[in-house]
Amino acid sequence: MTTVNALDQYRLLGRSGLRVSPLSLGTMTFGSDWGWGADDTQAQRIFDAYVERGGNFIDTSVNYTNGTSEKILGNLINEKREKVVIATKFTMARETGNPNSGGNHRRNIVNSVETSLRQLNTDRIDLLYLHAWDFTTSVEEVMRALDDLVRSGKVLYLGICNTSAWRIAQMQTLADLRAWSPFVALQIEYSLIERTVEHELIPMAQALGLGVLPWSPLGGGILSGKYSRADLTDENAADISPTRKGVIASSGHLTARALDIADVVREIATEMGVIPSQVALAWVLHNPAVVSPIMGARTLAQAEDNFGALDIVFTDEQYTRLQQASAIEPIFPDRFVSRPMVQQLIFGGTTVKGSK
View 1: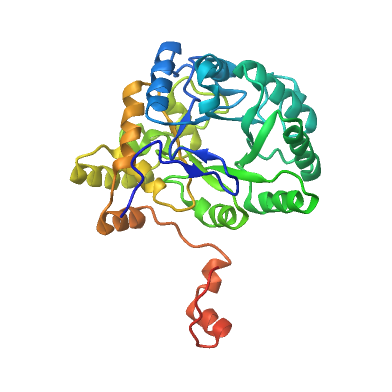
View 2: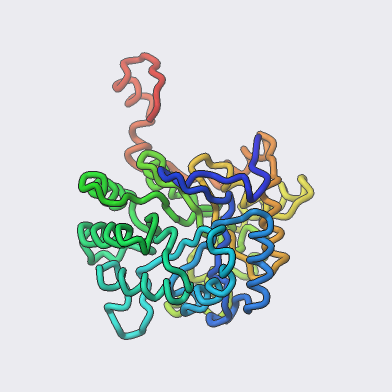
């Protein structure tokens, strides 16, 4: 199996002509405001190591570490601004008790963008994501507000995260119909322990021209081997946990099944003479819909480990083992339509080749 083996082997982002690295530098770990991030010095080491290797795609959000992530980035990009692609996000509230400091309505979109521009110390955002669907704002308000920002030059490209496939398809269709700026990127959770996005979201992205950028490709660290069955817990707190373990536990991913998958990842890593996190990242990169997984790191050593995923080449047998260990059950209507009887009724017993 072939692989991309360098950060400067750039890829096009979805239906756009924007060139981005095959690994994105996630900066939710920049800043210690949430209790477990990298300080300014460590953040600079990680950033410099990424950029020196040709990496150009930086991911943040207006609310990461209460704005510290963007502020640190604003200092780091400085003279490198023209070499890097900066992606940030709106939706999440910036002020407790103020309902209009969050959401996807025009007021918050504009205020979030202005806040990000100040914190990043830049005049434009290369890629702006809607961070999550808020279930209150109309698609017309969202897409028109986003198009206005693109026309103003404050935002260059648009993306969306953590939203149902049918809703994204509705928004993308509206943008095409009205000649508004379309989405070119889809950021979703995707890893060996979260493959349900393969049902609807990834096929939708491929059909509608959105490059897929997986977040948490290591399953919050579970696939790196840092957790064991002794760590299983029922923790499900609403507040941001002061520990990474608490964050992962509250996500619902720290389960016996996830640890079983992590065991297979570790076995294959041992066979290859690499570390588990590199195997997990390489598996995500193998999906042709994936443009650039978001790699997070709190230390320079962790970042350099992630870079090594670009060199991983699986044998067919190893890849099959990973697929089987993490396989997901089909859902309706695919579960129904794929049955032999239904296929017989659709195609009349003939064989027809074509794209889906």
